[in-house]
Image (cartoon, rainbow, N blue to C red; front, side, top):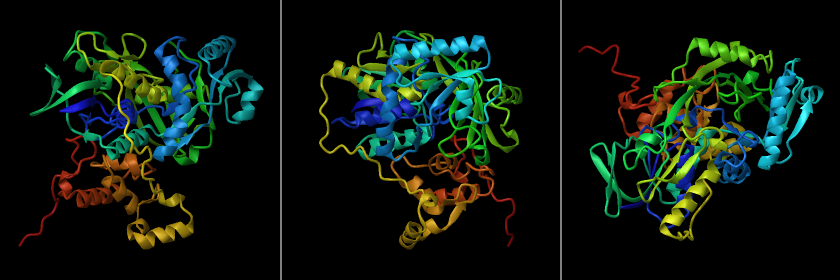
Length: 480
């Protein structure tokens, strides 16, 4: 029997399981998909918000304020890129400027450090390509950008290094209360656990209702994005928001930690919790709306479009509490924006609830918070590259020419704890396929490496989901 089962391997579940791995507990992270970070975590704006937006007194406000400064240490320990580039909320008329001033007041009430209001000239000193219509902005220097899927993978890997189990492709189909805790049905198999932490994202309400009454509802809200080539990455230097609306923070423009430019999202309430399609009309809309920020975006350099689903709660705030009718079952649900920004604080808050339920937890003496560093070959100097190739010749073979990713990096991404098992999983960890050709050239080589390292037939290698097959057989066969 496990002590704690965490359902959902997004950024929240990954932070929580890593925090749990500090303690002398038998824990398991359960995910229905083929990889960690395969839901909202892989398809969002990748921003660590300063914290001025959330309503004062809410969990969103409290945990965003606490979580933001925690990222520096976490990302350093786990060797994940983080850049504190600051954010601007722009105004193009007096009405929007009043909204900016309200955000400033809210930020002061929330305790956000160093925020200030800039006039149009001060904004242009920071952003030379900003629209001439901008008359002012709220500046927050503590805002940052990160790679959320890389962070979630690193958290889960570090948790596994510290003894946690990771179970992928394990959909929870039923939960039964038993004498000492809960029995989780995972298809034809079942596992027992004393305590459960529900981090199932858009499916959190369904998981809760397996053991408790209908305490809350989760509504999916789809947001679509454009990602542009690195040649456009320097057009904007900060995260730039428009004045917010009732549907959210609106379309933004931001650099990414890897040097691309991200534009989006829109906000569209939908019913289907699996619908992550992109649509031409919505993509066209975000491109038009982004011109309010800058007209200098070269959309002809777009390399891909994508969408993600946000878990919008009926409570309008994070739901982090024990289920009303299930002792030892903790819901961590409705974690929409600023969920990523609050994630490390959410993990600590959740563990505190668990401690209240079961008593104090004993910390491990040998907990290791540091992940083995990731080799990013092209960031090394020539001497270190040469030394590495002498030790392992696979680092001398470039597989992805767009991103300059070597075979050695791909093999490493596969063979770590919680390592890649699909083409997209390799892409998220080591970046082959993230460039201009989107895997058109390196994809087959990545498949060959996956098949070899996993001991599988190449026809068994899938793109992402278990049914996203790529090869079915040979087109031509030699005849005797």
